[in-house]
Image (cartoon, rainbow, N blue to C red; front, side):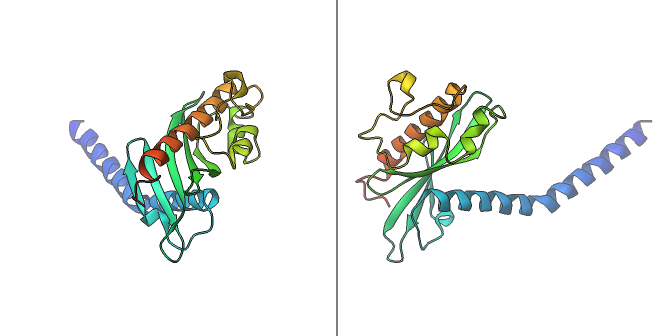
Length: 182
């Protein structure tokens, strides 16, 4: 019986390893495509491949979008924050002066029909942060004396999203603004 059980475990392990090896590259390509789509949606038009111009820093990852002369036209900052249902992973795009160009929610575990509305580009928090500069605007929900409306019945998700926007701005401010580190 021990030999049969060991044989079954060996066959199952081999099958699992084979499936992993076969699916690893397509999964990585899919994740890269998702990141590239998020970068393209949150930054002004660019001429480079920002996913190849990435820096991991404390608090997130910075993707620099550059024009044909190599000058930065924007920065996409990837951050994670905790929402109502779990981790909210997002990308926030900034122009070189710190103005929010756009946002993208890469993944979330929010409640369908409520917090999951955060993926809609036209939902209140996402639509209202566009064009604002966190240095001069209070990027928080109105319940917290901020300038941004929360998603109806989903204040926790809205707060988490705005916390992520502010975290991305801190990464931008500490690593991209006036530091000569483009």
